[in-house]
Length: 359
Image 1: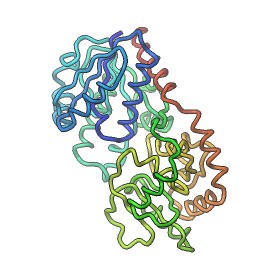
Image 2: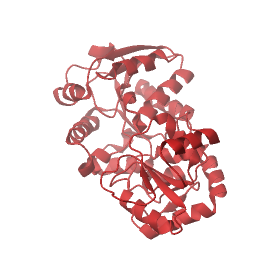
Image 3: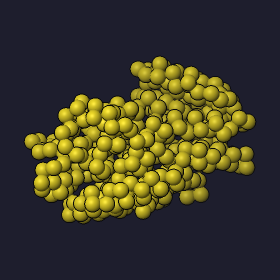
């Protein structure tokens, strides 16, 4: 088979980027029979796409074009012309990104990582809402198989009248860069970000990330002022918060160090498609407090302390519990993380591609 995969979104250093890069690498590692074509579109980060494809080993060709996201949305989601074959040639399978859904005569596969742009519109740029809304309609009408990372997203899709027979649940995994880091690296990171005390870590800032309740719970926990809370993201509204550090954007390479140096990851999000930070923390030996709902409960299993995300007292109790039982939850988290691997993700995805032969 000739299998084309849209890798355009690897340039953004998001969970979708992690997914796309690891899926491609591991597909190439297990599949030497099929021919792959990597389609990529970007303008500002065209060199990044080319550098990634040049780093790969496998039976593939790269087709990289100077197409910015706004143009891709116009061409593929609105005008619906030209087809993806115009860029990559005749193919048997096309795996689209989560941003655009080009027309194609091939067996069409896509991954829906989450529905946040549709379910949390007040936190999403209008252009992003437009792109995801349009794309979802084309996915429902045209796509043959839809991959989702959790049963939670599967249930959300059913509410949006997606054909349940098209959906395949395939979990994701932590990137290989996530592993326990040395004390020297942790010390250097603390100095860089002026972290003076033991700290709790939060990944992401905003309403969906439950930041207001997270800070309230932290303040209730930190009665002895012996902790700080480090939030990866921009401070948009929280002023004069004692023992609170907002880092802004940080390089991906620093995230394993943040996890390794933290007393715990505090991740009681209101909604996630999967919750990669939970697994990233587990493999860095960082215990986790997360929500007792949706995909986070699925990913965490018995490896984390689960809390009611809309209840500040529940979050507070969860933090106190994990601080008293750190070593136990480090062990539980490491054990839970072994249930997830990119090799397994790639193998299950390849089976989905092969379903195109049956139809």
